[in-house]
Length: 341
Image 1 (spheres, rainbow, N blue to C red):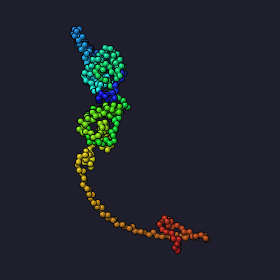
Image 2: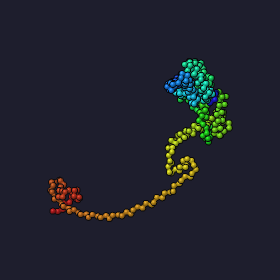
Image 3: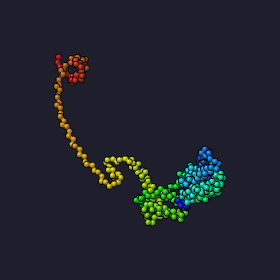
Image 4: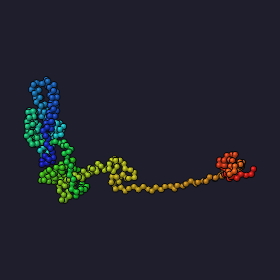
């Protein structure tokens, strides 16, 4: 981030959040200082008064002054209170602070915060446009917010349609994450920048991308369009790596089935393996042997004549059923003929 884009890309911290961060830092520092003071009082009980005073002054300078300076230097502007409140100390040009910046802020903090109980720092922060105290003014630093609500995060604008897919063969493995962050921040804030400043920033970022990838942009492509196309290509690759295995139904790390060669899955030029044809053996039906059919003899049952009973005039003669039962039950057929007695 350059100096022209610091105000747009980073939001200065407000007074309540800064006051809370300072309060957390003071509580932590004073707790450590009291513990060390009690330990030194026990350890230096046998020394004279001058030695005890020297040890007390040294512990005061080391704990209350040197410890905050060391913490801000090693953490690049993130103390315990600032880390809890999502704040960070940066330079005026947006870069991380160094030892000299932390030293000036710590030295001025003794006067602003410790000796005047924070009154001077409070007045200076209220008067300053970006909420800076005297230590920030002399050191050339600024306290900004690191955690921004998700609703305020802007999406990266898409590239021009005629640039989609133009950077498919670009090697992006050597581009660091810090450079990707700068490019995304520029693309999301490009409409708010001054045209001249935005063009210079886009050209600088494009030159860094070309130096990392080793491939110059196509002729006639503006720097901002080139940045948008490269970022869109990286997002497309990340999406393919994230969603391609689940969409295709392939579990990452699984062994492919035997019918598909393993080399063809990863894209190596190995000819496919053709399975030999399977010849089914002829099916021979067993011979069918017909069993002989033996006809059972038919025995004719004797016909027994039924007696004739005289019937009155005008009525048909009644035929008595046979002794062995009706003709239907015995299997015979009734003919209505009565043989002579």
